[in-house]
Image (cartoon, rainbow over all chains, first blue to last red; front, side, top):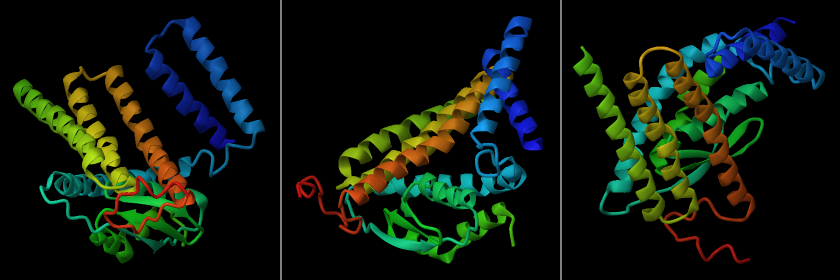
Length: 158
Length: 110
């Protein structure tokens, strides 16, 4: 029930940000649409900790700054590889262990890997992720497991 | 103060644009599908992120700032899914991710 209410609040905020109008008719149709969406999503069984993982919000906010730093560093590395006059590429792929317990955690980890330039997740299993990397050094970094640990901390389960 | 914000904003916009160009260049220069995927993610993250940052600094704080942040949020969630879909499809289609810098344009006719 709490999850349904928070979904409704989030959707109402999105409606207001996108319309930007306080016209009573627009606001009323927004409320009706949000209620319809919430009811339909509830009947489809989509409002659970996987379909609307609002419980991760606080810890994701703590994780994001670190991820943005990693993305910035990786951007520089990949841009250097592309612009270097000699195309020296030591690309490769490997399985990286993933310690997340829930599907949402795995998705966060796989998305973080793909979002970081220079590494792409090709295939996701329950306990490991097939990663292709532009340089083998970033594969080694992933094997060190810092990102894995931080995503597991986002998941918040022991 | 305004000049400072303007300067930061323009630096972000220009750097973002340069990253977009670098990304396009990488699409051409890199040898095969998997390495080209990495060039694409350069535009998805650095390019889009910096351009949005520059635009946010240019707009008056308000609803438009939130709309730009919403664009960033949606791209942040969806672009890795698209990259993953392309990579996974290539893997299922039989391309070897360990082919190093070999050109793969001829290897899919099996």
